[in-house]
Image (cartoon, rainbow over all chains, first blue to last red; front, side, top):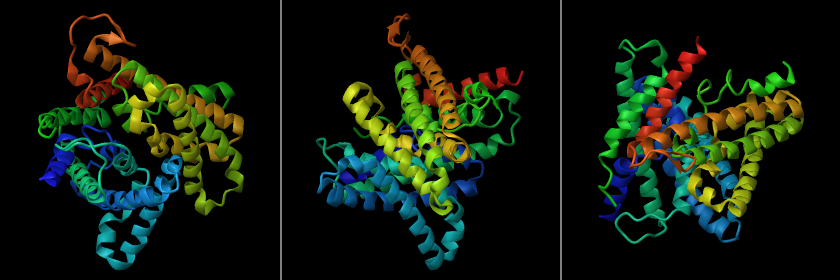
Length: 200
Length: 193
């Protein structure tokens, strides 16, 4: 039950893009076409889940154990950068087809604040999900990270569908490009506000 | 390019928010009020100037293959310093901005200036460039914060001049996208004339 609450909360109620504003740059940058949006979402999902697992363990058994919490920011960004590189190399060897699908998006992900944001959030913030406020356990953290990245994909894919339609419409000159995309994202975020209160 | 131009180009011609469209996450997330927008802008300005100076100083000695990781570590170091300073002197603001202070590390503006400017220019020029871009970013965030605070709460910098509740949606997520979108339209209209 608790995992279900985590999943619903992370996908709809606290959508990472539309209510937490993490990873907005690629949200605006690669959402022009449905196919690239899907590719980017897949890559983000993969990296966020993996990065959260690794950074959680490093934080618990290395940084906290030796009293080095002040190195959190530096350590996490290095781990994520190294991880992205490694994922790229492994994918290239093991699954060339998946690499071809996600390949170009992988290097971009190092500087996607969604990855670092989720990694920092799960080790510093207390969550409730219908229970008394507590720090997440490892399984909860991984489920939360996975669900969050699914939420990223949901918002990204809906938005790219909207933008594909926008491209065919006659938009006033000053609104062309990013401004109209931002206004549409605002309306989409309004729609997502309807989910608030679903999970306390 | 004169020293003055180096500084002023970041404010209008290469404004990071409205022209270069960089650093969207903190722009949208932290501008719930004018004070929050201003503080986030100043925090980024601090990191931007220091990292630009440090990177322009070490750039000639960094091997090309590892330059991005090295730059990120330099930036992350200054962000950690900033975290300590803010925790010590302005704990209230630090708590409000929360996650977005450590996330300055992955703010594309900072790494972008390191790549595009600091690694091939002198220390003074890089500092001015960082200062200009930082001031431009701070101004955009403050303007966005002011607009959202007026619409959402009827006040500016905490000074209330419209009684009543205001439109809560503008303080929450949708208002951030809408306000930034419309401000960008306004900026386009004025800048293209």
